[in-house]
Amino acid sequence: MKASELFVRCLENEGVDYIFGIPGEENLDVMDSLIGSKIKFVTTRHEQGAAFMADVYGRLTGKAGVCMATLGPGATNLVTGFADANMDRAPIVAIAGQGATTRMHKESHQVLDLVNLFEPISKYSVQIREPEIVPEIVRKAFKAAEAEKPGGSFIDFPENVAEMEVDGKEPLKVQSPRAPVPPDDKIAQAAKLISEARYPLVMAGNGVVRAGANDALVAFAEKLNIPVATTFMAKGSMPFSHPLSLGTVGLQARDYIACGFDRADVIVCVGYDMIEYHPYLWNGDKHARLIHVDQSPAEVDEHYILDCGVIGDINAALDGIAAAATPQAESKAGSLRETIVDEINAEADNDAFPLLPQRIMLDLRKALDPEDVVICDVGAHKMWMARMFQAERPNTCIISNGFASMGIGVPGAVAAKLAYPKCHAVTVTGDAGFMMNSQEIETALRIGVAIVILIWNDSKYGLIKWHQDRRFGRDTQIEFDNPDFVKYAESFGARGYRVESADGLLPTLEKALADETVVVIDCPVDYSENMKLTEKLGQLVCPI
Image (cartoon, rainbow, N blue to C red):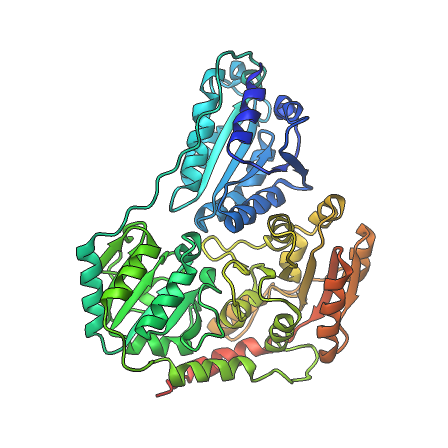
Protein backbone atom coordinates (compact mmCIF):
# COMPACT_ATOMS: atom_id res chain seq x y z
CA MET A 1 0.00 0.00 0.00
CA LYS A 2 1.00 3.63 -0.31
CA ALA A 3 2.38 5.55 2.66
CA SER A 4 -0.66 7.83 2.49
CA GLU A 5 -2.95 4.81 2.90
CA LEU A 6 -0.96 3.62 5.90
CA PHE A 7 -1.14 7.15 7.29
CA VAL A 8 -4.94 7.19 7.07
CA ARG A 9 -5.14 3.76 8.70
CA CYS A 10 -3.03 5.12 11.57
CA LEU A 11 -5.40 8.09 11.96
CA GLU A 12 -8.35 5.70 12.07
CA ASN A 13 -6.51 3.68 14.70
CA GLU A 14 -6.25 6.83 16.83
CA GLY A 15 -10.03 7.22 16.75
CA VAL A 16 -10.08 10.31 14.55
CA ASP A 17 -13.65 11.31 13.65
CA TYR A 18 -13.06 14.48 11.65
CA ILE A 19 -10.27 16.19 9.76
CA PHE A 20 -10.83 19.91 9.23
CA GLY A 21 -8.97 21.43 6.31
CA ILE A 22 -8.50 22.34 2.68
CA PRO A 23 -7.22 20.04 -0.07
CA GLY A 24 -4.08 21.09 -1.93
CA GLU A 25 -1.62 19.84 -4.50
CA GLU A 26 0.87 18.50 -1.97
CA ASN A 27 -1.70 16.49 0.04
CA LEU A 28 -3.39 14.89 -2.98
CA ASP A 29 -2.41 11.36 -1.98
CA VAL A 30 -3.71 11.72 1.56
CA MET A 31 -6.99 13.17 0.30
CA ASP A 32 -7.36 10.28 -2.15
CA SER A 33 -6.61 7.74 0.59
CA LEU A 34 -9.39 9.22 2.72
CA ILE A 35 -11.97 8.08 0.16
CA GLY A 36 -13.90 5.27 1.81
CA SER A 37 -12.45 6.00 5.25
CA LYS A 38 -14.74 6.34 8.26
CA ILE A 39 -13.01 9.66 8.94
CA LYS A 40 -15.10 12.60 7.74
CA PHE A 41 -13.17 15.37 6.01
CA VAL A 42 -14.73 18.78 6.70
CA THR A 43 -13.70 21.15 3.93
CA THR A 44 -13.38 24.63 5.41
CA ARG A 45 -13.11 28.02 3.74
CA HIS A 46 -9.85 29.02 5.43
CA GLU A 47 -7.12 27.02 7.13
CA GLN A 48 -7.36 29.22 10.22
CA GLY A 49 -10.99 28.17 10.55
CA ALA A 50 -9.89 24.53 10.23
CA ALA A 51 -7.33 24.93 13.02
CA PHE A 52 -9.84 26.63 15.33
CA MET A 53 -12.32 23.81 14.69
CA ALA A 54 -9.68 21.24 15.61
CA ASP A 55 -8.74 23.37 18.64
CA VAL A 56 -12.27 23.48 20.08
CA TYR A 57 -13.07 19.87 19.11
CA GLY A 58 -9.98 18.72 21.00
CA ARG A 59 -10.78 20.81 24.04
CA LEU A 60 -14.37 19.55 24.25
CA THR A 61 -13.69 15.86 23.61
CA GLY A 62 -10.23 15.35 25.10
CA LYS A 63 -9.26 13.62 21.83
CA ALA A 64 -6.86 15.39 19.52
CA GLY A 65 -8.65 17.51 16.96
CA VAL A 66 -7.07 17.14 13.53
CA CYS A 67 -6.58 19.78 10.85
CA MET A 68 -4.84 19.59 7.50
CA ALA A 69 -3.48 21.98 4.91
CA THR A 70 -1.17 22.04 1.97
CA LEU A 71 2.37 23.40 2.13
CA GLY A 72 3.50 27.05 2.32
CA PRO A 73 0.58 29.47 2.76
CA GLY A 74 -1.81 26.66 3.65
CA ALA A 75 0.40 25.60 6.54
CA THR A 76 1.11 29.15 7.74
CA ASN A 77 -2.63 29.82 7.82
CA LEU A 78 -2.92 27.04 10.41
CA VAL A 79 -0.51 28.74 12.79
CA THR A 80 -2.90 31.02 14.74
CA GLY A 81 -5.48 28.34 15.55
CA PHE A 82 -2.75 25.78 16.23
CA ALA A 83 -0.92 28.13 18.60
CA ASP A 84 -4.20 28.87 20.35
CA ALA A 85 -4.80 25.17 20.98
CA ASN A 86 -1.25 24.59 22.17
CA MET A 87 -1.33 27.49 24.64
CA ASP A 88 -4.88 26.73 25.81
CA ARG A 89 -3.91 23.09 26.52
CA ALA A 90 -6.20 21.64 23.85
CA PRO A 91 -4.99 18.47 22.08
CA ILE A 92 -4.48 19.08 18.37
CA VAL A 93 -2.63 17.38 15.51
CA ALA A 94 -1.92 19.49 12.42
CA ILE A 95 -0.87 17.87 9.14
CA ALA A 96 0.63 19.75 6.22
CA GLY A 97 1.61 18.58 2.79
CA GLN A 98 5.13 19.44 1.72
CA GLY A 99 7.15 19.63 -1.45
CA ALA A 100 9.10 16.55 -2.49
CA THR A 101 12.29 15.86 -0.53
CA THR A 102 14.14 16.08 -3.87
CA ARG A 103 13.64 19.86 -3.94
CA MET A 104 13.97 20.80 -0.28
CA HIS A 105 17.72 21.43 -0.43
CA LYS A 106 17.27 24.56 -2.55
CA GLU A 107 14.94 27.48 -3.20
CA SER A 108 11.67 26.01 -4.36
CA HIS A 109 8.11 27.18 -4.97
CA GLN A 110 6.09 27.50 -1.70
CA VAL A 111 8.57 25.43 0.30
CA LEU A 112 9.21 26.56 3.88
CA ASP A 113 10.91 24.80 6.77
CA LEU A 114 7.61 23.96 8.42
CA VAL A 115 9.05 21.73 11.14
CA ASN A 116 11.10 24.59 12.53
CA LEU A 117 8.23 27.02 11.99
CA PHE A 118 5.89 24.96 14.18
CA GLU A 119 8.48 23.76 16.71
CA PRO A 120 8.22 26.76 19.12
CA ILE A 121 4.42 26.48 19.30
CA SER A 122 4.11 22.70 19.61
CA LYS A 123 4.96 19.78 21.84
CA TYR A 124 6.16 17.72 18.87
CA SER A 125 7.03 18.81 15.33
CA VAL A 126 8.33 16.34 12.76
CA GLN A 127 8.71 15.52 9.08
CA ILE A 128 7.98 12.06 7.65
CA ARG A 129 11.11 11.23 5.67
CA GLU A 130 10.53 7.52 5.05
CA PRO A 131 7.24 5.62 4.64
CA GLU A 132 8.28 2.94 7.15
CA ILE A 133 8.17 5.39 10.08
CA VAL A 134 4.58 6.51 9.52
CA PRO A 135 3.09 4.38 12.35
CA GLU A 136 5.64 5.57 14.89
CA ILE A 137 5.27 9.24 13.97
CA VAL A 138 1.46 9.19 14.06
CA ARG A 139 1.38 7.34 17.38
CA LYS A 140 3.94 9.71 18.94
CA ALA A 141 2.11 12.78 17.61
CA PHE A 142 -1.17 11.75 19.22
CA LYS A 143 0.47 10.59 22.42
CA ALA A 144 2.23 13.94 22.81
CA ALA A 145 -0.85 15.97 21.92
CA GLU A 146 -3.13 14.16 24.35
CA ALA A 147 -0.71 13.76 27.27
CA GLU A 148 -1.18 16.08 30.24
CA LYS A 149 -0.71 18.97 29.75
CA PRO A 150 -2.18 18.59 26.23
CA GLY A 151 -1.08 20.64 23.26
CA GLY A 152 -0.08 20.53 19.64
CA SER A 153 1.71 18.07 17.38
CA PHE A 154 2.66 18.96 13.82
CA ILE A 155 3.36 16.49 10.99
CA ASP A 156 5.03 17.56 7.74
CA PHE A 157 4.28 14.99 4.98
CA PRO A 158 6.31 15.43 1.74
CA GLU A 159 4.36 14.59 -1.39
CA ASN A 160 6.86 12.06 -2.77
CA VAL A 161 6.98 10.17 0.55
CA ALA A 162 3.16 10.05 0.64
CA GLU A 163 3.04 8.20 -2.69
CA MET A 164 5.78 5.67 -1.89
CA GLU A 165 4.93 2.00 -1.41
CA VAL A 166 5.34 0.41 2.00
CA ASP A 167 4.80 -3.21 3.09
CA GLY A 168 4.60 -5.04 6.39
CA LYS A 169 3.63 -2.02 8.50
CA GLU A 170 0.57 -1.65 10.71
CA PRO A 171 -0.73 1.06 13.06
CA LEU A 172 0.71 0.84 16.57
CA LYS A 173 -1.33 0.00 19.64
CA VAL A 174 -2.82 3.10 21.27
CA GLN A 175 -1.56 3.41 24.84
CA SER A 176 -1.59 6.17 27.39
CA PRO A 177 -0.37 6.20 30.99
CA ARG A 178 -2.70 6.61 33.94
CA ALA A 179 -2.02 9.51 36.25
CA PRO A 180 -0.15 8.31 39.35
CA VAL A 181 -1.77 8.33 42.79
CA PRO A 182 -0.47 11.31 44.81
CA PRO A 183 1.92 10.42 47.68
CA ASP A 184 0.26 9.93 51.06
CA ASP A 185 2.69 12.27 52.81
CA LYS A 186 1.82 15.11 50.42
CA ILE A 187 -1.90 14.55 50.96
CA ALA A 188 -1.32 14.65 54.72
CA GLN A 189 0.76 17.83 54.39
CA ALA A 190 -1.93 19.56 52.35
CA ALA A 191 -4.64 18.43 54.77
CA LYS A 192 -2.67 19.86 57.71
CA LEU A 193 -2.27 23.25 56.01
CA ILE A 194 -5.99 23.42 55.25
CA SER A 195 -6.98 22.29 58.73
CA GLU A 196 -4.90 25.07 60.28
CA ALA A 197 -6.13 27.77 57.91
CA ARG A 198 -8.53 30.49 58.98
CA TYR A 199 -9.58 31.56 55.48
CA PRO A 200 -8.81 28.85 52.92
CA LEU A 201 -9.83 29.39 49.31
CA VAL A 202 -9.77 27.13 46.23
CA MET A 203 -8.82 28.37 42.77
CA ALA A 204 -9.80 25.79 40.15
CA GLY A 205 -8.13 25.91 36.74
CA ASN A 206 -8.62 24.24 33.40
CA GLY A 207 -6.80 21.12 34.58
CA VAL A 208 -9.87 20.24 36.67
CA VAL A 209 -11.96 20.07 33.48
CA ARG A 210 -9.31 18.09 31.58
CA ALA A 211 -9.06 15.57 34.42
CA GLY A 212 -12.83 15.17 34.71
CA ALA A 213 -12.51 16.17 38.37
CA ASN A 214 -15.52 18.47 38.55
CA ASP A 215 -17.55 16.23 40.86
CA ALA A 216 -14.52 15.69 43.07
CA LEU A 217 -14.03 19.47 43.28
CA VAL A 218 -17.62 20.06 44.37
CA ALA A 219 -17.42 17.24 46.92
CA PHE A 220 -14.11 18.64 48.24
CA ALA A 221 -15.60 22.11 48.71
CA GLU A 222 -18.73 20.77 50.38
CA LYS A 223 -16.85 18.41 52.70
CA LEU A 224 -14.44 21.10 53.90
CA ASN A 225 -16.82 24.08 53.55
CA ILE A 226 -14.33 26.05 51.44
CA PRO A 227 -15.36 28.60 48.77
CA VAL A 228 -14.20 28.06 45.18
CA ALA A 229 -13.27 30.49 42.42
CA THR A 230 -12.59 29.28 38.88
CA THR A 231 -10.41 30.65 36.13
CA PHE A 232 -11.94 31.72 32.82
CA MET A 233 -11.14 28.34 31.25
CA ALA A 234 -12.57 26.38 34.19
CA LYS A 235 -15.96 28.07 34.21
CA GLY A 236 -18.67 25.62 35.22
CA SER A 237 -16.35 23.17 36.98
CA MET A 238 -17.93 24.62 40.13
CA PRO A 239 -21.56 25.42 39.27
CA PHE A 240 -22.16 29.13 39.70
CA SER A 241 -25.44 28.42 41.50
CA HIS A 242 -23.60 26.55 44.26
CA PRO A 243 -23.50 28.53 47.54
CA LEU A 244 -19.74 27.98 47.79
CA SER A 245 -19.06 29.40 44.32
CA LEU A 246 -17.36 32.79 44.09
CA GLY A 247 -17.55 32.92 40.31
CA THR A 248 -14.65 33.55 37.99
CA VAL A 249 -11.20 35.10 38.39
CA GLY A 250 -8.89 36.37 35.69
CA LEU A 251 -9.72 40.02 35.11
CA GLN A 252 -6.47 42.01 35.08
CA ALA A 253 -8.11 44.83 37.05
CA ARG A 254 -8.90 44.41 40.72
CA ASP A 255 -12.29 42.73 41.12
CA TYR A 256 -14.58 41.69 43.96
CA ILE A 257 -13.12 38.22 43.97
CA ALA A 258 -9.76 39.83 44.76
CA CYS A 259 -11.18 40.50 48.22
CA GLY A 260 -11.34 36.76 48.78
CA PHE A 261 -7.74 36.30 47.66
CA ASP A 262 -6.60 39.20 49.86
CA ARG A 263 -8.16 37.57 52.91
CA ALA A 264 -7.15 33.98 52.16
CA ASP A 265 -4.27 32.63 54.20
CA VAL A 266 -4.19 29.31 52.29
CA ILE A 267 -5.01 29.07 48.58
CA VAL A 268 -5.50 25.62 47.08
CA CYS A 269 -4.70 25.84 43.35
CA VAL A 270 -6.28 22.86 41.62
CA GLY A 271 -5.43 22.17 37.97
CA TYR A 272 -4.13 25.73 37.76
CA ASP A 273 -2.34 26.95 34.61
CA MET A 274 -0.34 30.08 35.33
CA ILE A 275 -0.91 31.30 31.79
CA GLU A 276 -4.56 31.97 32.66
CA TYR A 277 -4.12 34.28 35.64
CA HIS A 278 -0.63 35.27 36.72
CA PRO A 279 0.04 34.93 40.46
CA TYR A 280 1.42 38.47 40.86
CA LEU A 281 -2.19 39.61 40.32
CA TRP A 282 -3.56 37.61 43.24
CA ASN A 283 -0.50 36.94 45.43
CA GLY A 284 1.51 40.05 44.73
CA ASP A 285 2.53 40.50 48.35
CA LYS A 286 3.18 36.75 48.75
CA HIS A 287 0.89 36.65 51.77
CA ALA A 288 -0.78 33.29 51.09
CA ARG A 289 0.43 29.77 51.71
CA LEU A 290 0.01 27.86 48.45
CA ILE A 291 -1.04 24.29 47.78
CA HIS A 292 -0.61 23.08 44.19
CA VAL A 293 -2.83 20.13 43.19
CA ASP A 294 -2.24 18.96 39.63
CA GLN A 295 -0.93 16.17 37.44
CA SER A 296 2.08 18.33 36.54
CA PRO A 297 4.60 20.16 38.75
CA ALA A 298 4.18 23.89 39.23
CA GLU A 299 5.74 26.49 36.96
CA VAL A 300 8.57 28.51 38.54
CA ASP A 301 7.51 32.01 39.60
CA GLU A 302 8.51 34.22 42.51
CA HIS A 303 4.85 34.76 43.41
CA TYR A 304 4.07 31.04 43.26
CA ILE A 305 6.37 29.46 45.81
CA LEU A 306 4.64 26.39 47.16
CA ASP A 307 4.12 25.26 50.70
CA CYS A 308 2.90 21.93 49.37
CA GLY A 309 2.71 20.30 45.95
CA VAL A 310 0.36 17.34 45.49
CA ILE A 311 1.23 15.83 42.12
CA GLY A 312 -0.85 13.05 40.60
CA ASP A 313 -4.43 12.20 39.77
CA ILE A 314 -6.53 15.25 40.70
CA ASN A 315 -9.59 13.20 41.64
CA ALA A 316 -7.56 11.05 44.03
CA ALA A 317 -5.80 14.08 45.47
CA LEU A 318 -9.02 15.95 46.22
CA ASP A 319 -10.69 12.88 47.70
CA GLY A 320 -7.65 12.14 49.86
CA ILE A 321 -7.23 15.66 51.18
CA ALA A 322 -10.96 16.02 51.89
CA ALA A 323 -10.94 12.82 53.92
CA ALA A 324 -7.92 13.91 55.99
CA ALA A 325 -8.55 17.62 56.56
CA THR A 326 -10.69 19.27 59.22
CA PRO A 327 -13.69 21.12 57.74
CA GLN A 328 -14.19 24.83 58.30
CA ALA A 329 -16.78 25.52 60.98
CA GLU A 330 -18.60 27.92 58.68
CA SER A 331 -18.43 29.03 55.06
CA LYS A 332 -16.36 32.13 54.33
CA ALA A 333 -18.21 32.72 51.03
CA GLY A 334 -21.16 34.58 52.60
CA SER A 335 -21.16 38.32 52.01
CA LEU A 336 -18.65 38.16 49.17
CA ARG A 337 -20.82 35.74 47.17
CA GLU A 338 -23.88 37.88 47.85
CA THR A 339 -22.08 40.94 46.48
CA ILE A 340 -21.00 39.07 43.33
CA VAL A 341 -24.51 37.66 42.70
CA ASP A 342 -26.14 41.04 43.28
CA GLU A 343 -23.78 42.70 40.78
CA ILE A 344 -24.51 40.11 38.09
CA ASN A 345 -28.26 40.55 38.49
CA ALA A 346 -28.27 44.32 38.94
CA GLU A 347 -29.17 45.15 35.31
CA ALA A 348 -31.54 42.25 34.68
CA ASP A 349 -34.47 44.56 33.92
CA ASN A 350 -32.56 47.46 32.39
CA ASP A 351 -34.32 48.43 29.16
CA ALA A 352 -31.53 50.65 27.84
CA PHE A 353 -30.86 50.42 24.11
CA PRO A 354 -28.31 49.66 22.74
CA LEU A 355 -28.27 46.86 25.28
CA LEU A 356 -25.99 46.78 28.29
CA PRO A 357 -23.52 43.85 28.35
CA GLN A 358 -25.04 42.63 31.61
CA ARG A 359 -28.53 42.40 30.08
CA ILE A 360 -27.23 40.50 27.03
CA MET A 361 -25.52 37.90 29.20
CA LEU A 362 -28.50 37.38 31.48
CA ASP A 363 -30.91 36.95 28.57
CA LEU A 364 -28.52 34.51 26.89
CA ARG A 365 -28.36 32.48 30.10
CA LYS A 366 -32.17 32.38 30.26
CA ALA A 367 -32.40 31.15 26.66
CA LEU A 368 -29.97 28.25 27.08
CA ASP A 369 -30.16 24.93 28.88
CA PRO A 370 -27.35 24.25 31.39
CA GLU A 371 -25.61 21.78 29.06
CA ASP A 372 -25.66 24.02 25.97
CA VAL A 373 -22.28 25.29 24.77
CA VAL A 374 -21.23 28.91 24.34
CA ILE A 375 -18.04 29.69 22.43
CA CYS A 376 -16.77 33.10 23.46
CA ASP A 377 -14.67 34.96 20.90
CA VAL A 378 -12.07 37.50 22.03
CA GLY A 379 -12.88 41.19 22.49
CA ALA A 380 -14.58 43.47 25.00
CA HIS A 381 -17.49 41.03 25.25
CA LYS A 382 -15.05 38.36 26.49
CA MET A 383 -14.34 40.37 29.64
CA TRP A 384 -18.03 40.47 30.47
CA MET A 385 -18.71 36.85 29.56
CA ALA A 386 -15.68 35.50 31.38
CA ARG A 387 -16.36 37.53 34.48
CA MET A 388 -20.15 37.28 34.78
CA PHE A 389 -21.71 34.58 32.57
CA GLN A 390 -23.11 31.91 34.87
CA ALA A 391 -21.91 28.47 33.81
CA GLU A 392 -23.36 25.40 35.52
CA ARG A 393 -21.42 22.65 33.74
CA PRO A 394 -17.79 22.29 32.66
CA ASN A 395 -17.01 22.91 28.98
CA THR A 396 -20.20 24.92 28.46
CA CYS A 397 -18.50 28.30 28.17
CA ILE A 398 -15.37 27.95 26.04
CA ILE A 399 -12.98 30.89 26.35
CA SER A 400 -9.60 31.26 24.71
CA ASN A 401 -7.45 32.70 27.48
CA GLY A 402 -3.94 31.39 26.94
CA PHE A 403 -3.32 32.65 23.41
CA ALA A 404 -6.60 34.64 23.39
CA SER A 405 -7.02 34.87 19.64
CA MET A 406 -9.84 36.69 17.89
CA GLY A 407 -11.68 34.70 15.24
CA ILE A 408 -12.26 31.51 17.22
CA GLY A 409 -16.01 32.06 17.65
CA VAL A 410 -17.66 30.92 14.40
CA PRO A 411 -15.41 27.92 13.63
CA GLY A 412 -15.44 27.01 17.33
CA ALA A 413 -19.23 26.82 17.33
CA VAL A 414 -19.14 24.50 14.30
CA ALA A 415 -16.78 22.17 16.17
CA ALA A 416 -18.88 22.34 19.34
CA LYS A 417 -21.98 21.23 17.46
CA LEU A 418 -20.08 18.33 15.91
CA ALA A 419 -18.74 17.32 19.34
CA TYR A 420 -22.09 17.71 21.14
CA PRO A 421 -24.78 17.33 18.44
CA LYS A 422 -27.64 17.14 20.96
CA CYS A 423 -26.78 20.51 22.53
CA HIS A 424 -27.24 24.02 21.21
CA ALA A 425 -24.03 25.74 20.14
CA VAL A 426 -23.86 29.53 20.34
CA THR A 427 -20.96 31.80 19.60
CA VAL A 428 -20.76 35.12 21.40
CA THR A 429 -18.61 37.38 19.28
CA GLY A 430 -17.83 40.98 18.59
CA ASP A 431 -18.35 42.46 15.16
CA ALA A 432 -14.57 42.48 14.60
CA GLY A 433 -13.96 38.87 15.64
CA PHE A 434 -16.98 37.72 13.64
CA MET A 435 -15.64 39.15 10.39
CA MET A 436 -12.30 37.36 10.83
CA ASN A 437 -13.77 33.91 10.14
CA SER A 438 -17.37 34.57 9.11
CA GLN A 439 -16.74 32.62 5.91
CA GLU A 440 -17.19 29.43 7.93
CA ILE A 441 -20.94 30.12 7.92
CA GLU A 442 -20.89 28.43 4.53
CA THR A 443 -19.09 25.42 6.02
CA ALA A 444 -21.71 25.11 8.77
CA LEU A 445 -24.57 25.26 6.27
CA ARG A 446 -22.94 22.80 3.89
CA ILE A 447 -22.33 20.14 6.56
CA GLY A 448 -25.72 20.76 8.20
CA VAL A 449 -24.83 21.99 11.68
CA ALA A 450 -27.11 24.45 13.44
CA ILE A 451 -25.32 27.26 15.26
CA VAL A 452 -26.38 30.65 16.56
CA ILE A 453 -23.99 33.59 16.16
CA LEU A 454 -24.72 36.44 18.58
CA ILE A 455 -22.83 39.56 17.46
CA TRP A 456 -22.22 42.33 20.00
CA ASN A 457 -22.17 45.22 17.54
CA ASP A 458 -20.45 48.52 18.35
CA SER A 459 -18.45 49.15 15.12
CA LYS A 460 -15.24 49.41 17.12
CA TYR A 461 -12.36 47.40 18.47
CA GLY A 462 -14.07 47.82 21.82
CA LEU A 463 -11.50 46.14 24.03
CA ILE A 464 -8.70 48.30 22.64
CA LYS A 465 -10.82 51.43 23.13
CA TRP A 466 -11.33 50.34 26.75
CA HIS A 467 -7.58 50.03 27.29
CA GLN A 468 -6.81 53.29 25.48
CA ASP A 469 -9.41 55.19 27.50
CA ARG A 470 -8.12 53.75 30.76
CA ARG A 471 -4.50 54.58 30.01
CA PHE A 472 -4.66 57.82 28.03
CA GLY A 473 -8.21 59.12 28.45
CA ARG A 474 -8.67 59.05 24.67
CA ASP A 475 -8.77 56.54 21.83
CA THR A 476 -7.45 56.28 18.30
CA GLN A 477 -7.86 54.12 15.17
CA ILE A 478 -10.45 51.75 16.63
CA GLU A 479 -13.54 52.50 14.50
CA PHE A 480 -14.70 50.67 11.37
CA ASP A 481 -17.83 50.07 9.29
CA ASN A 482 -19.82 46.84 9.21
CA PRO A 483 -21.95 45.22 6.51
CA ASP A 484 -25.65 44.73 7.09
CA PHE A 485 -25.28 41.56 9.15
CA VAL A 486 -28.83 40.37 8.43
CA LYS A 487 -28.35 40.61 4.66
CA TYR A 488 -24.85 39.18 5.03
CA ALA A 489 -26.25 36.08 6.76
CA GLU A 490 -29.01 35.73 4.19
CA SER A 491 -26.49 35.91 1.34
CA PHE A 492 -25.06 32.60 2.60
CA GLY A 493 -28.50 31.05 2.96
CA ALA A 494 -28.50 31.49 6.73
CA ARG A 495 -31.07 33.44 8.71
CA GLY A 496 -30.41 36.88 10.12
CA TYR A 497 -32.18 38.84 12.86
CA ARG A 498 -31.60 42.31 14.26
CA VAL A 499 -32.41 43.18 17.86
CA GLU A 500 -34.36 46.47 17.94
CA SER A 501 -35.03 46.82 21.68
CA ALA A 502 -33.83 45.45 25.00
CA ASP A 503 -36.89 43.25 25.48
CA GLY A 504 -36.46 41.90 21.94
CA LEU A 505 -33.26 39.95 22.61
CA LEU A 506 -34.63 37.00 24.60
CA PRO A 507 -37.42 36.10 22.16
CA THR A 508 -34.98 36.52 19.27
CA LEU A 509 -32.56 34.10 20.92
CA GLU A 510 -35.34 31.60 21.58
CA LYS A 511 -36.51 31.80 17.95
CA ALA A 512 -32.94 31.42 16.65
CA LEU A 513 -32.35 28.31 18.76
CA ALA A 514 -35.61 26.80 17.55
CA ASP A 515 -34.78 27.48 13.87
CA GLU A 516 -32.25 24.60 13.81
CA THR A 517 -30.06 26.23 11.19
CA VAL A 518 -27.31 28.82 11.08
CA VAL A 519 -28.62 32.09 12.52
CA VAL A 520 -26.84 35.43 12.86
CA ILE A 521 -28.17 37.91 15.44
CA ASP A 522 -27.09 41.54 15.20
CA CYS A 523 -27.28 42.94 18.73
CA PRO A 524 -26.22 46.56 19.36
CA VAL A 525 -24.25 46.91 22.62
CA ASP A 526 -23.50 49.91 24.83
CA TYR A 527 -19.85 49.60 25.83
CA SER A 528 -19.88 52.80 27.87
CA GLU A 529 -20.39 50.26 30.65
CA ASN A 530 -16.71 49.33 30.25
CA MET A 531 -15.42 52.55 31.75
CA LYS A 532 -18.17 52.55 34.38
CA LEU A 533 -16.92 49.13 35.43
CA THR A 534 -13.33 50.40 35.49
CA GLU A 535 -14.35 53.30 37.72
CA LYS A 536 -16.43 51.06 39.96
CA LEU A 537 -13.63 48.54 40.46
CA GLY A 538 -11.17 51.37 41.04
CA GLN A 539 -13.27 52.44 44.02
CA LEU A 540 -13.88 48.88 45.19
CA VAL A 541 -14.43 48.37 48.90
CA CYS A 542 -14.34 44.77 50.03
CA PRO A 543 -17.50 43.46 51.72
CA ILE A 544 -16.95 42.17 55.22
